[in-house]
Length: 614
Image (tube, rainbow, N blue to C red; front, side):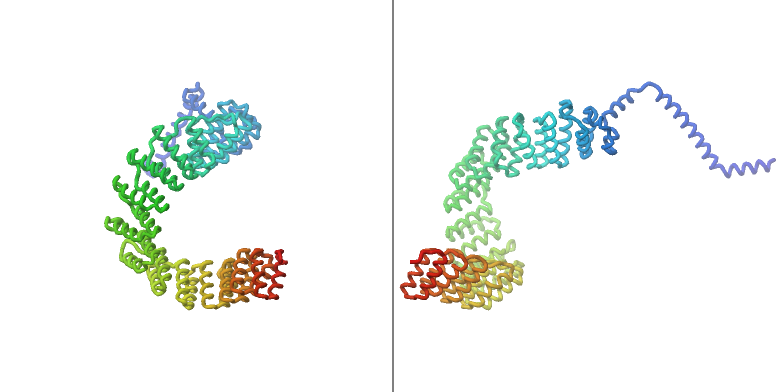
């Protein structure tokens, strides 16, 4: 017996984990059964207030068929029922716009009549759809919905238009905002008395440069109340952009009258408008008004007015303004000094420009490449090449700046014009040394220098270097090369340039290049070559009447009547125009020189040209 108990005890001990699991599982099952029976008893009882609230909320949430699944499977009767479909669409707009639009379109196809929808519910429906569409950038859908509302429903109202306008403006859909207004404005019964709406439309019109409607919007805005500082600012932007300085000035007067604060930005915009229209006296008056208004004038104000006076050549006024600027506690800027420098140089007053430059350095003004280059340009124009080069050397010694392509271009041209081709080439080398790439203007200046130095070999080398650097030659480049060939009387090379090289560079020769070479040929009494060039031109285009007059006039003056007669015949063959007075002068010269063969040739050409023959 003891052995049996021992075996049983040992077996229970071995299965202790399994037995414990069975006991716990049985307890949990029993507890669950008891809880379930109690829950059924509660559910079978009367509905609690919480359950009623949950049922009401569920009623107004999108049904399963509206928010998911196929819309095509929804009962058409529900789609036609405003009390069901309007809450469904409105709720979907919050997070599922595309589905809301699909449900709306399915409802209209099923026969939903918008005019039968209660007014309040219809407004709620379209406010939700239109604003949601604009928020996600589907402004086209928003406009389409508005069209539906007008064509099939009670029509647009100002509340929906105002919401759409403000939303489009905040999202920077400026052009779309104007398109929505244009459609709404087709309804003459729609009365808009919302000042904010007109303000948004004015801003959108200025941003899209739709200037034709800016004045209308501003006038409408004023009928709804006093414009704000921003509204006046937008109207001044419109006036300035269209060059209407009178309107801009009137806006400033209206702002003063209304007690609206005017900042320096708006003042400067109006002043710039006056300066651009060369209304410098009005601009000066505005500057004084700014001073009396509490010194809202800043350095930009003075620079703008100085630029106007400098352009007009009135440098005395520029100096007066600079002095006045200092008296009012403003420090001239780099731009201020740049205006003075450029103005004095344009007026060929290099000495005064030098004084300005020295003043800048003495006052510790931050120098820059533009200021140095401006004075270098002045020295170059005055023919003071050595002074220009000294300033260039001083510029190279400055660590804060280095010459740019424009600086080198000015110096290279100045040295070439002065016959200092070697100095120009050294400048080219220095330009490359500082990592700057010569442009077409630099190469053209060097090529022109080769003409003055009669150095055809260098010109050829520079031209090849130009092509190798990837710089595309221009018409000016080929004009310089033609001059070089004409200077050396290399007519075949010049003709080859016109006939082949220009096309090889992907260009078509312009008529003025043919005219240039033909005139050079006549000056050197190369009549046959002049006619060859004229024929080349005729294959590209019909020679102009002015070119014919120029060439025939030169032939008459140089007594090259044979060439003149041939050119007239060529003009007649291609149907070009020849002036009757020019032809008559040629005929008169041939008669005086008693050249019967030339006379007969001219007569035949004049008959073909339908010119009177005497």
